[in-house]
Image (cartoon, rainbow, N blue to C red):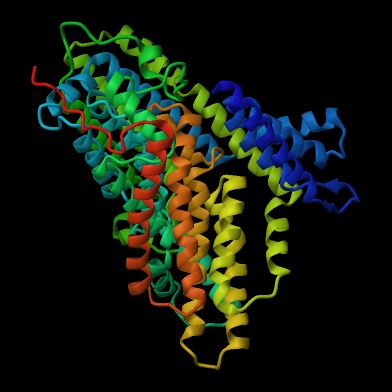
Length: 576
């Protein structure tokens, strides 16, 4: 088996290198550039070798090599400069510090016994793998207002329960990832909506359409096929216990062997390996964990309101207090990274205080596990830092511009615009690891292309013109979220692995079949849109039916190939 896999990996790596080398352009200084090579190289090396840090560094360095005119010394200097710039960026630095505080929070909760107390008490009510998976899925939808907050809350809250009910970390990280960006991207109130509406407003302004940007955003939601199908697929997999691809083997291992991680896995947040402790006779009660999570969410929401309100007041030069600014207005201008930093610190302080009051930890031990908890995040933060750095590199060599120019050079009928935009956005987001970056690049192009082609090919006043525009807006968001959801260099993918305690490459490998399934059905729906079925009330039921059928077929194929049962037994925790 191993000998068969090695040649396959070699073929994949060589094929990607060939594709990367065939896509070239001449840079402004006359240097030959290969804009697709660095991100493709980083992704395929990470998956093939399971060594994420060297793979990402290689991608950044190859970017630097091209920018530096193929001077290896200058390339190394450029690479290190991008890394330093990524670390010193205000938003990035806030996220890195926030991660360390969350690590400290987990360290104190774990060492004090609060996590174990909660798991013990809940396991009397949630005693099966299916129930634990459903709890995580519902939590993921409930925490809809921010994707980062979603990964933190759902991952940390569900992990003790899913471990006890023998649900694999791969499945947990898939649930967390699939209910973060896909949910936040279509929520009526979220930290995403301000940015999304702002981009739409700019795009509508360029075509002189007199329409509220928020109204256009609402019209686009039913056409966001990928996000909607990705969320439905989570519940389908959890409730049926039918899995596809490597996830079937992971779940079978967890249920039959009790191993929530495979042997030799390297979880991004190796809690048990680093902390190696459960407190002795005194344990902090489980309600402290719940109260800490509530504090995290509450302070984060207040922080979002405050930072957004202050921005609104300063921009509009209002003489009012932040509490008088409506939350929905503040949300669009908020600094969610700062809000998360405040929320995580409040949660840590509450957990620390409770652990000291219940005498489950001495102050010295609490500080020891604060530092050990921060250490949990070192590897994950290193991956985040390099993922941000490769984004700087691909910007420098013009990866996204190259893909967009290739798409724009092809003439096609207006109803095909949403499909083309979706495919291009998928590729950009997967290779750059950023949904918001993809949104910023693609939205002005999508709106202008859709409107101009539709206006030139259809009669003036035809409502189909704006329908194509709405579908194209949706295609940008759906395609961008695809990469955010499953690219190994996406920050949300990394954070889902981190807070679920999963091996990052295991998470990527087990999640990709689900993401590709939802994306392929999304492509079919955009094709149906192009041939004349333009109503989402018809397209969405077709998509859901195709999803159910495809999921069942792929499950049967996977079970046959692996000689495993199609339905994973629903493990039930025995009564003590």
